[in-house]
Image: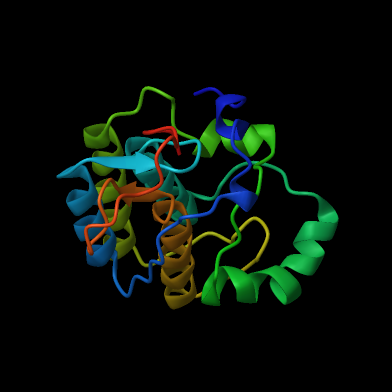
Amino acid sequence: MSIDAQRAIDTKRVGGRRKVRYRSYQEILDDAHRLAAGPHRSLGNWSLGQVLKHLGNAMQGSVDGQGFPVKWYLRWLGPIVIKPRLIKGPFPAGFRLPLRAAEKLVARDTTTFDEGMAALLAGIERLQRETSRASHPVAGRLTIDEWDQFHLRHAEMHMSFVVPEEGEAGVRIQEGVENDRR
C-alpha cells in the first residue's frame, strides 16, 4: 500500500462518476463482477481490486473494531452530525484517512480483483453470520441495520469511481483519465 498514491487525485473534485445506489450486498457483488467482466477505468486513486479489498476490510472492522484512535471532537460530534450522512448518504468523497487508519483499511497498490473480491466476500459473509458489531470510530454505536446501510453507502461512494469504458448508451467515457487507480 502506498499512502501517497491514494492521494494523487483529489477525489472531491472528480467528475464523471457513476450514480450508484445499492439495496443489498448482492448488488455490490453483481456490480463488481459486471465491471470486471469488461473494460473499465478508475477515475480516482484505487483500482477495482483495491476498492473491493477496502470495503471488505471496513466490513471486518465493523465486527472486530477498527483499532485506531479518533480525535475526541470527532467522537463527540460524530453521532449527531456525521452519523446521518454515513447512514443515509450520499457518502462524502475525498476524505483522507489518518495514517494509522489508512494502514489498516487501505489495500496495497498491487491488490488484484480476485484478492479484493475474496476480501469483500469474506466481509459480507461475516456480516451475515455474526450478530454483534463494534462501535463506529466516529458515528458511535450503530444497529446492525445502520451498519448495513453504512456499508452500502460506503460501497456506493467508492464504486462510483469505477466506470465502464463504454456506458450503457454506448457513450465513450472521458478519454485521458488514468485507468485502474481508485
